[in-house]
Length: 184
Image (cartoon, rainbow, N blue to C red; front, side, top):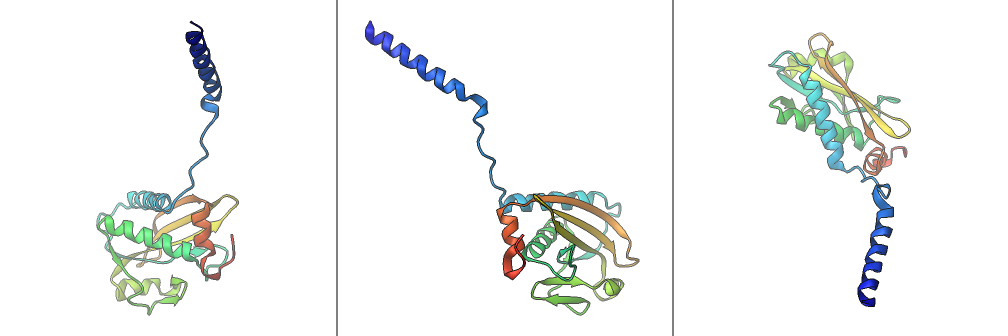
């Protein structure tokens, strides 16, 4: 009898102590991964493409994203996000011209491919590209703001635009800081 009483008391104590933890003992948030960054970039491209009324957008070029505070600079972040965007466009059956194969209308540095705005209309003839995907990124307190525009190579008009943000997590900061660029 004493043994039954002791077992019941221990079970009651166990239930009482675990009940106190309840939902207030939330798990720490998971760190954002490169996969999460890629998925957010893909979602942004899907939003951008939803704005296109022309079903045949033709061939297009994708430029490296540049730092909004210094448009002559980029980082691994700008190059990688542009690669994610190009991949998504290819997955959605767009013909993406790889700028690294032809570089006569671009400033190409070790840091990426930059479209020259004065030459964007020449792309229509030289590359048979109807559109160019261009964009910037800017670092703010706890995130990175990304602005993308799909620009006509015929008249420089903006066909579609999307803005999104990524958390300033370890993987993003690592890409921003790679290759000797300033630490964010």
